[in-house]
Structures are given as C-alpha cells and as structure tokens.
Length: 483
Image 1 (cartoon, rainbow, N blue to C red):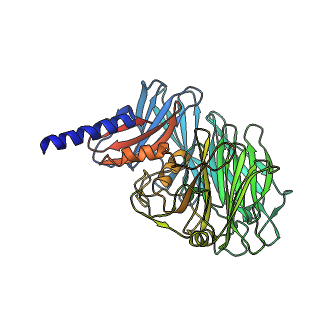
Image 2: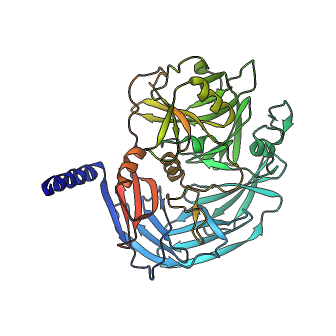
C-alpha cells in the first residue's frame, strides 16, 4: 500500500513538473509582520525587456525590478497612497523609473506612485484635478506615456489626459460630435448614451456611467468579459473601443501617436421576426458576430472594415447546432461542476434574454470560438475580479489592478458561469470535427488546482510565454512558472 502511494505521488510530481517550468522565486524579505499579501501584478518594459513585480499587503507596496534574464536590479517598499485610491489603472516607464497610476473608488480623483529603481526611492503624488462633468472610461499605457481616458457627459467628446515622466500632464480632446450614432429605435444619440445604454431607451442605470472590459484577443476569453456592451482592445500605438447597439457594432480606432481616430460602424445580423440580442469580438482583421432571438441564432464573420462577409450561418430553434464541438454547457464557476443542455431551443432562449457574447482565439491556425451568454448583471461601476484570483472583492486596503487584460481573461475563463458552446473552425472558417484542444489557461488551471496555500495569483506574458505566479504565504515568497 505504501509503495502504491509513493508511486502515485511520484506520477503526480512528474506530471506537475512536465507541465511547466519554474521561472523565478522571490523571497519577500522586505515584508514584516503577518499581513497577508492580497495582490500581485507585473509590468514588462517592451523596450528593455525588464520585468517589474509588485506585491501589496494592504499597508505597503513592495517593488522588485529584474533584467530580462531575471537578475535583480533593486527592490524596496512604498507606503502608497491613501486607501481610497484602490485601483491601479496604468503605468509609465522612463529608464528605471516606473510610475503607477491610481484612481479612487468614485472614479473622480487620481494619483500616482513613482518607483525609482535607479535611486531606490519612491514618490507619491495626488493630482489637483477632479472629474466633474466627465465620466472615467479607462486607462491606456504604451510604456513611456499613460493616457487617462474620460468622456464628457451627454456628449461625443473623448478626453485624454496624457502623462509623461518629467513633463506636466496635458489634456487633449477627440470630438466625435459629427459622427452619427443611432440607437435601437432609430434615434440619433451622443456617444455617451450609446456606451452607457447600448442603444436601449430605458435602462434603470445612470445616463452617464458604463463598464469597459479590456480584451486581450491573443488569450482565451470567457463570455463574462466578451458579453459587455463596451470593450477596449489595447494595441501598441493606441486602442480600439467597441460599442454595441442592436443593429451596429461601432468601432472607434484611436491612435495615441497622432491623437486621431477613425470610426467604422458594422452591421450585425438581423431577423425579420423580432429584435435580436447580439454582440461581437475582434481578432486580427476580422469581426465575429453572434445574434439571437428565441427562435433563431446567426453566427457571422466579416472583414474589419465591414465590406466583406466571410461567413454566415443561421440555426433554427428546432435544429441541431451542426458546428458545435461540445454540448451546450451550463457552468457554475468550476471546471468539475456543470450540466449539459440538450435542446437548441433552450439555448436560444438563454441567448435571447441574457447577456450574449462571443469569444475567439487562435490555435495552430484554427479558430476556437465560444458562443453563449451569462445571467444579466449590473453593468456600471469599476470592474472587479472574482474572489480567489488576486483581487479579493471587499477586502479592505487591497488593490484592484485593471491594466492587465491577460489576467482578467484568465480569471474569468477559469471561473466562468456562462451557458456556452465551443466550436472549431479552420483558417478558411470551415467547421472542423473533433475535440477542442486544451489552451494555456487550461494548463495553468490544472497546475493551480494542485497547489494549496496560494494567494495573489497573476498571469502575464513575458518573453513569448505565459507566466503564472502565486504567493506562498508559508514561505513568504512569490513563485513564477512559465507555460
């Protein structure tokens, strides 16, 4: 019996060690006392390859900077900002100086913490402006500059507060007032209302505020993130904002290099019988749509300029979904507990009345496409991660970090509560039979499930690999693995 147990443990050890490579162990000898490390986040300098890792234990923020080959440059501690500044929304980098930008709980006031790894010092700053007639949208970082993005209430004005180390911040405005945004009832609306309401006439929500989900299209995504009305796709020299109405996906492509924009409004699939619930996802040069009533569902793919339809297939409620590679799955937040739904009609009813979404990722030149919905939730307010993934909801003093869409994708993917199907298509968008291959998040989750006593998980990309990390509270060290 003992030999069998030893053999089992050995097999588990071999399986664990072969699944990933330990990248780095970081002893947190800066920490004193028994305070729990709640949050970890990383910043990779795309120009130098340096890797910065930050740990937060409610009272202090610990910073570590490494070279691309993971040699320690320096590490020290910041006392941080007042506790009401609880969300880190972006960063800027200048040589060995990394500035973290934060906002308060009400999305009105902003501050920053500068980690100077050359001199081993920190500087905390509270900015002397407060949003009054503006709504916070998101933050965007492109290494040397941080852009705080806001929208003037009841308008089509997007404002960018631009921060660059060594200079006073500036404010620039992109005026979209000449663009036409039509709601679900044929009425022309300002962009603020379209982003807040999604084209609906009555919402019961604020006229102004809305939630933006940041998307990393290179990573697996869940319906939780892709079913939002407004999504942001960060890129190297700007970002795309998408806003959904019943008939259109409005794509606002913003260049932070020359502070310009372009607008493309792409028609969605429509049905003659009734209005449809719909959403979109952008990957590379394509836009993927799903639209559904209780009787019909259409999946379509167009070129990103909207000029060419590449794929369109419609399913009736009495038909089998011929292009699905999994059953219709109803999940409750864990991999091991879900049930299957047999009838297409039940699936369509869920799509029609819940928050619908579509997510797409590439695997060996094949498209893995998830279609489904999640139960409707309040869309306003700051995005929050699920408990257990580094951002404990309601934990006093803990940071929420919103600039890493890869980690948001991982957190929502591995705790999804959506009703969904998964489909496999080749590069020409022809359906392929077979099992859905495991992705990198599946592999990370398999390893994470085997480890107890872990806190402050994070996932990020570094040197063309996915890195997963957690805090070992028994050893007071942060451990990173490469996948």
